[in-house]
Image (cartoon, rainbow, N blue to C red; front, side, top):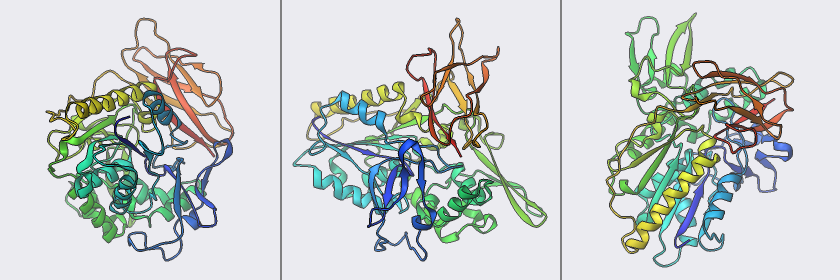
Length: 451
């Protein structure tokens, strides 16, 4: 590898521990999540202050799900393995994993990212960054705001909410109402985490239909009080995304991959008033939005995974979920091809870095394997998923594997829709794979949590 390859995980994708080694976020044995709300955000914590320290530090790429927000789980093992198999990686010289404190603002972590890169980079060595989900916001902020990023040849974002995500809005407003009490407590805790407010959608997605209010589509940032959110944190998050989504001289050094493998991705919200209470309903429909804004990876809508205000950015599409864009074989093959293209550019012009590219956005393909997975399933009850297999003709079969269980055949209706009962697994986080052969590679990946 003739450059420094840097990998950033997504939100909740870095394990966190206290100074005495107590894990407050991560994944224990048997894939059981470790989530300790009482330690995650200490009383009086000011996580937005760059000078604030509470002794909690990131130490590894190890994701645990944030129920009702994102289904990430594991150590990015498949991503690591594919990169290692494709390139001669040396963690002491040309490969850097950057776990970060995902509670803190992106700008805070971008500064630390720059420090980590400079500590590892030598001479004129160029940098290629692969960033998942929230990690892409950090990497993009570094690219556009850090003078040291002149050496960065490419930032590749996978399922990054460049313009925010409606699911984050629903989580911040409604998370405290989750029926599973530990998850509601976690949601209440994370309402004090500034980085989550940097995930609020920047574009108008809320239909304001409260009594006495003229119905219209509004931005979440203009409804902070009505939604019961911290106005300062909301404005900070909006300002961050506005600054990120502007024209920039390094825009052509950004490649974005949008996932569209989830049949239902939160796309819009409706604000009602009911018996003097606010009610925010988040849905996957697009009746309030333009038709081209449909689709997503289950967490990030396609419209958000496309960087805003960045002419010349190359946008690609992956028929995957938010987990699948960093774990499915087809997605990882595409990622390696993207990295290879950067390396070819560097060999052509090693001093200037990436060659000038026209960029472009071909639009998401119509044919897709789509899946619906609940944020969590009660223990002792069957895990039932749904989805659609478009253009699945010619006698092609569909199989579903949950965890280490044998693959189960999935019956397809004439229109390609399906419902699959995967049994009642033990509590914990289980990988889900859909394939067209019982023993074949996964075509689409996701995660199922049982509590």
